[in-house]
Length: 406
Image (cartoon, rainbow, N blue to C red; front, side, top):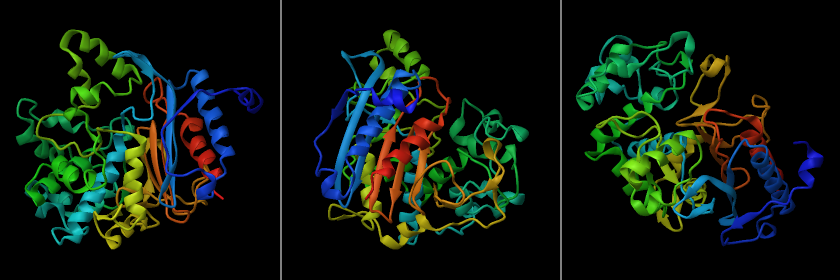
C-alpha cells in the first residue's frame, strides 16, 4: 500500500487512559495519526492481525493504543485490547541480563567470571574460557538458534536424554561443542541465556523465574507479566491469538481445555530455565520496565537496582573485530549486556536517537529505550505467518514513533 492510499485509511483504535497528552511531553500528536494509518495498512494488507503500542516520556505514558483483531474469536472477544497479553519472546533476554546485573551489584558474581566457576561441566577445553559476559553478548560460541547459522547447524538437544532433561541438558550443550572460540564471533544463541538462568538459580538458591519475578516484575508493578508456562485461566483468556502456533493450540484447547494455550511456543523441557524468552506481558507493563531503567533503577519511588549497574546496558562490550555472522550477516555489531545499541552510522534501517538500546522479540514486538530523549516505546505487530519478518512492521514502525519527538 503506497503513501497516498494510506492517507484514505480510517483506523479504528482502542485507547487506554494515559497520564499525559502528547503535547504535555513535547511529542507531535499528529505523528500518532500517521502511526495508526501505518499499522492499519499492515492489517489490511494481511501481514498482521493487529498492532499495539505504548509510549512514555518524561515520566508519563501519553499513548496506549491497540487496533485490529485476534486471529479467531476467543472467549467471546475478537478485539485486540490495550491490556491483551502477548508473548514478548526474546525481549526476555534483556530481563535476564538485568537480573545478572543485579546479582553483580550485590557482589554475587561478575561479568568477567568464567562460567566454569558456577557450572563445572564448562571446565573443558575452550568452554573453560567462556565468561558470563560472553553469554550475555552472544559471543560464547555456544550452539546458535536453529537456522540462524546454517553453515554449522548444531542441535544440542539431540545429545540430551529427554526422559531426564534436568540432569543431562548441560552436558548435552558441552557435547555439542562450539561454533567459534569465546569472544571471536557474534552468533545468536538461545541456549546461552538458559545457561545464564542456571547461573541465576545457583547464585540465588531460587528458580531463575522466581528471582526475576520477585526482584524485577513485582517492584516494577508488572503484575500481569508472567511466563507462558505459568499462565492461569484468567491470564489465558487475555492471550493474543496471533499466528499458526496459537491457532493450533486453540484447536488443542477443544480437546484438553483452556490451559493448553499456556504451553510454551518454543521447545522446552522440565528443569531448563525459561530465561531466553517465553514471558507474556502488555505494552504498558513493558514500559514500566523501561521507566525503571531510565529512572536509574527506581520505579515510582521504589528501588529496583542501582544506576551504575544499569549504565552497563549502554556500554559496548564488543571489540571492533567481532562480527555478527548470524542470519547471513557479516558486519560489525555494537552490543551491551543483553541488548543491541543503536548507531546511526551502522544501522540505516530505522531512525532512532544515537545510543538507543532495544530488543526485538522474534520480530513481532520491540522494546526501545532512549536515554537522550527520556523516551520509552513498546510495540507489537505480530505477523500472521510466523518468522515472516518484514521491515515496515518493525523498523518502519520505530521510525514513525521517533519522528514525533520534539
